[in-house]
Image (tube, rainbow, N blue to C red; front, side, top):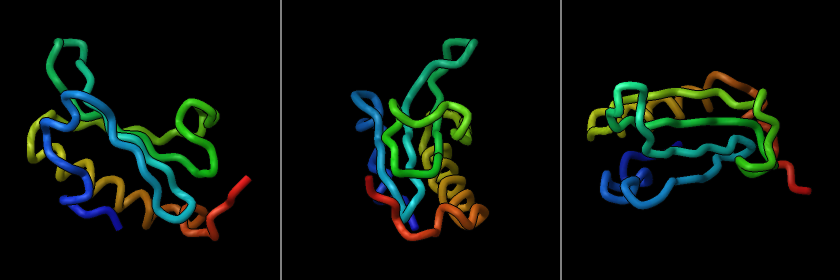
Length: 96
């Protein structure tokens, strides 16, 4: 499971994105702007083995939270719940 400490601090996201994996599930967390130009967390999960830029777009499951400490923790909770929800994410890691 992804921990709150694993997801780093808010300053990290001001400069770059955070990507990782748990077994056969890949994830990406990024800071973006919404339609009102407010900072948000945008997170994606998808089944591996492909990296974000090579994965089929229809395989992404997305989630958005406010860009603050509570939002960061909510993103971690969401990633963990998606991992638990989808049995194919727990399959043996596929490498190609």
